[in-house]
Image 1 (cartoon, rainbow, N blue to C red):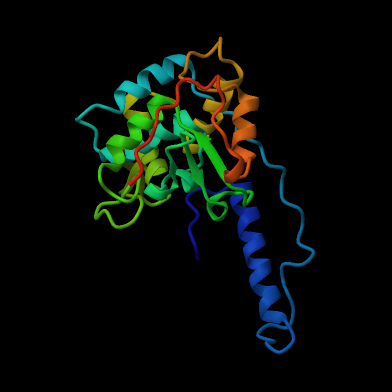
Image 2 (cartoon, rainbow, N blue to C red; image 1 turned 135 degrees about the vertical axis):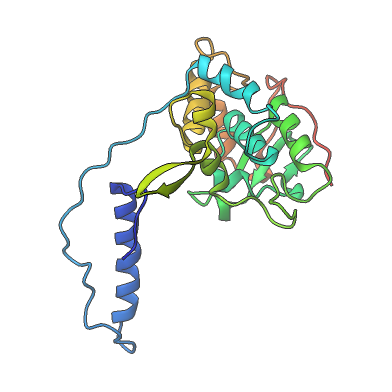
Length: 247
């Protein structure tokens, strides 16, 4: 029996979809590993409650400089990845595997290939000064922007969420903190890497209300994310982009 630590309607939906695909494959003519797909005509799952967590200005003021503390139990590369997520709106799977040849010095963007993007479209993400500074420190002379312990592969997709959440252990049947997460250490309400993306989008839409570094309006950023790489051009109003040095 699998123990799902983070049981949710979303996880149940993903598991049902995966199980249905597996049984459909197993029941196809010529295989006949199972007589039929048991996932057909299952009752509907409950409606999902979409997350709406957005960090406040005060929380951002606590988080950003706090990630530079030397006494945190989480490695510097993971903390830099959290910073990068906050200023770029990229998903964990998009940003953690950034390689040097994806940095476009001419356009001041990082060009994420379609295979790593949820909607299978190339993303040409503009890089403000803060993002460039983070990249320079995190990447150094390496190939990956956010390399794992040995430098030959990117951080795992769970690295950021694990650092924010922390780890637990069982003591006499009770879960207690093994390593405190960044949210707990800073006294912040728990948030996920995707909440950083939502926060950045919120600040792009509300530039006057939310004082975060921003190089473009929300509509311009959206167009840049959707435009094919060969047609991405730096706009004249984007004055916070700084040139990147390619490998």
